[in-house]
Image 1 (cartoon, rainbow, N blue to C red):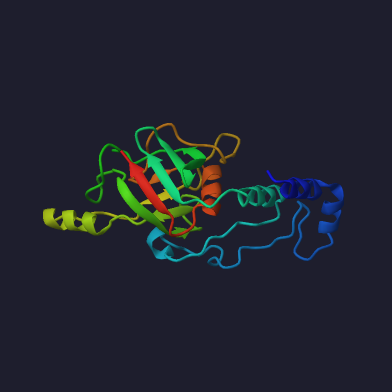
Image 2: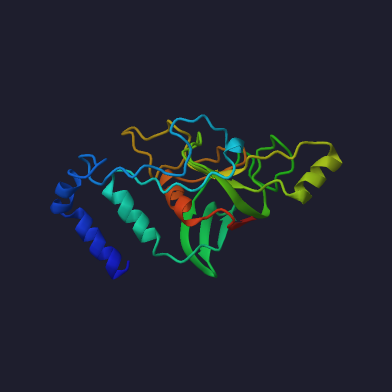
Length: 222
């Protein structure tokens, strides 16, 4: 953490900031002003995963001091140049050059072994793709789209007369899932449960949403 971020963290947590905040337009008693989510789709819009192409990232700034501090700290990290998924070990790495900046536990499709070749096979693709768009209103908290199928995937499916499938995402929990106390941030189911997507905790998704920009390459290893 840089000295500047540390100093800002102290300032934002100070009682005088909270008192000042209450006098600011759009501010709520919980802390920070409500900055909204400019650039994202309207709240409550019914968006399917595939209908959300080209949605710009939303930093999710609301009235929480903790959210603002966390995102300022993430902004100090080096730019992510690769997302690497290790299917066998069940983790996702975010890399800046050769350095692993973040590592997250994850879960896969219900039949995880092998490369995805057709719709409904329950497999998660393997190979190199790109994070090409995102959906802030996903049924699974938030989601980042993986550019499967590519030309090779479509060609092999066509040769066999099958649909290669699609809508492969990195996403959070299914909306409505939570612990008994209602918390969700670091919750991740024990078993593979998706239809082929890569599922992480909501807390991990929040970080990936900020760090993994559209256009970031993704490498999915067996």
